[in-house]
Image (cartoon, rainbow, N blue to C red; front, side):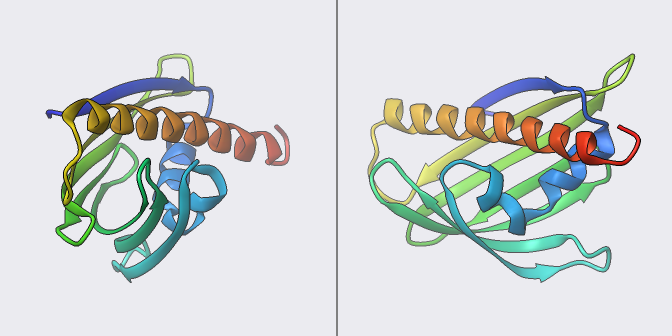
Length: 151
């Protein structure tokens, strides 16, 4: 995939990391820059299949809709619906159990805004988004596991 790809590791179990990443409505609580998420549709499993996001962009607040596909507990993928702020967006999380416990998280993102942005700025924005999301996901999943009885 062209775009930005980064990985991180967490001590949290793969299922926990998946559940945190799949709870789109909670993103404003732990993803820096996400102002609001509205779940527009869910599947039979209760997971969001379509959601509207409002994020603080470098230049302006952006609004876009993403459609989701899940492979529990190892992958969450999304595709953007073209709109006023994005021409295209695609990305995914992959969650890989680590030997000895914990999870490796891979995050890939490619964004093409619907307005003119120099390529280097687009790349910087993608890197910023991916880095903040990985950091927030790792912290949130570890905090949830630490709060469980018996932890």
